[in-house]
Image (tube, rainbow, N blue to C red):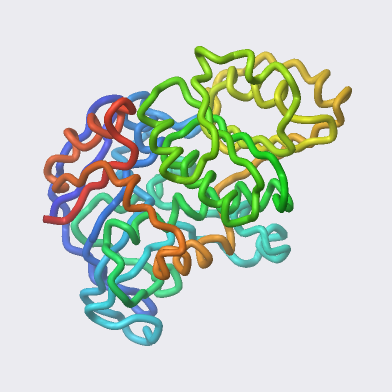
Length: 341
C-alpha cells in the first residue's frame, strides 16, 4: 500500500509499506479523506511543529474519515462497510489528567501524525491503517467522507470555545480565519455569542469567515486601529501569530478572556504581561480537545454545522506533494484533503 511520509524538511515521499492487519479490538480502515492541518504543514516546510522535531520518517495526518474494511476479534462498535470519523487521540486513561476528564493533557498521550514522541506516532495519510475500535465513530445519513474528516478540527474549535467560558450575549474576536479560525467562529455561534468578529491579513480567509457566520471581518494589516480599544469579551487567537496575540490583549475588555488556540513559533518570545495584570485578563490555552470530538461528530452528521464551504479541494494520496502546496497557499485554499483513489 502507499503512504505519504515526511523524511525531512520539504522532503515528502510516497512510499510503499506493508498492509496492516487488525488484532483483537482493532479495526482495519481504508482512508476516506484526510485533511491537511497547519501542524502537517509545519512538519513538511520546517521539519518540526513547535518543539516537536521530525527525527525519523513521519506519516502526517490526524484529520480523517475512513471506511471499515475488516474487524479484529471482539470488535462490536463498528462493522465492515461503516463510514467512520477517526479520533487521532489515544490517551492512557490512567494518569491524573485523564482521571480528571482532561484527556487532551494526558501524560502518556499517543496522538497520530505527531513527532512529540520517539519513535514517532505515525499518522493517517496512507491507504489503510489499523485503529482501536474506540477511536472509530460510525455515522449514518448522507454526510460525505470529506465532511466527516472535519470532526477533528471542529473539535478543536469547540474545545477553544469551551475554554472561553459562557458566550451567551458576548462579543467575540477570532484572529486568524483559516480552518480553525472559521470553525471557532461556527462554534462561537453555536455557543450563543451575540457578535463575532474575525480578523486576518488576507481577503479570502475573511470571505470564508463571513460564510462561517462572522458578523464583521477585519483586515488586521490595514485596520490596526480596530484593536486599539478594548471592546471584546472573549478573544480567540487562532493564527499562531504573536502580533495577533498582542491585538487580542489590546482589544479584550477589562476582566475579559483571551484563549490561545494557534501554535506560536517555537523560539522564546518577548511578551509584555502588564495588560494581564492591569486589566485582569484571563489568558488561557486550548490544546486539542476531549469530549468535544463526540460533539463534533454529532454536529457534522446532523449538519447543524455545515463545513462544506470550507473544503477547497481533494487530491489523490499519490499527489500529496501537490496537495501540500495547495494547502500552504492561503490565498486560494482553506481546507485541502488527500483521498484514497
